[in-house]
Image (cartoon, rainbow, N blue to C red; front, side):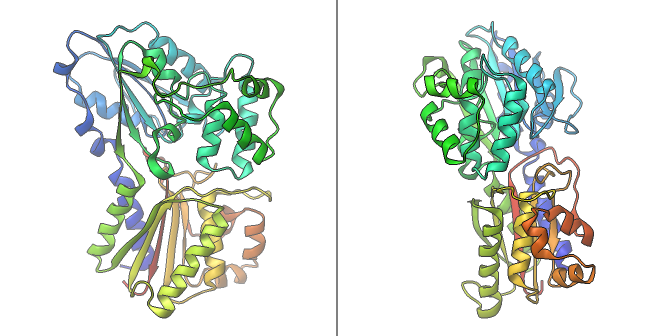
Length: 423
């Protein structure tokens, strides 16, 4: 198999390992365990509709529910209502879905069970602001956070303290019912509070923490938002709150699991596979340079690994937007890697987002080969200028090296693979 075909096969295996139909059923309750109560299904995220469909397929008893997912990610369900909304900048459809979700769980009894299906993207899909803020405020703050270079955990800390549904508030609204949250992680470290900004888990961070992040990145908040943080009125649900005493959280798919699935594909092709980490963070272009440095050491000196081999990594990089290009973080990382590799022979790479959307483009990522820079120069494309303009998508699309998957119906964060040597 050619190197690019093998890289794509690894990416596909990573995505397949996190499909709800595979990873959700072992964690579902049984109708017998419910007793005389009702089952209510709620959820949000890019994988939530596929999760809802899997739950329906495996649940023989009655149920009701509401799940919100990204436009284009809906999966038909018979008993659970699926709503589509905007991501990464929220819209009115997401706001209305969040309001209805709170209403749905507001009058439950201690006999009832809420199954909450959460995956990456839920923060933008449940944009219910606290009193005093409007949807436009949430949209502006979200755009500022996305362009600031803040990490995903920092962005979610700010979001939680300006939200009427995140930071444990959704679980508190379900009380006294039991709440079982099933999570597909898209964040470094797999901390539940950072997956969709933790609508059903206790939040140890504070309004003061959110304010510090706002100051750190120079984010201009509207007066009402700053007042919520300054006064402490935006405080989230804290550990030990009795309304969360009957909640349980289970992680059903993670970036590490996806990388292990990709490693199995590499080994089946006769390659050594090394997972560098599932939680790499930092400025995308800097991460790309570091990964290139590691690849050059392996290719040139056989250290710390001999060739042929594959270096795998996951996590979530950030991009501080300075140009006017199309993004996104995976292609920015890959372009910086390619520039640093400078056409190194027998080094191929791929970077992509497992949800099929890198940044705001319907493009998952791209492929890099030893002749990438030469082909770009032949077309009059200047790699350094494209990187400076944050236009990784424009760069790789012009070369025909973009990777388009369509909606993958899951999300276990970024995927990077560097193939060194001949497979």
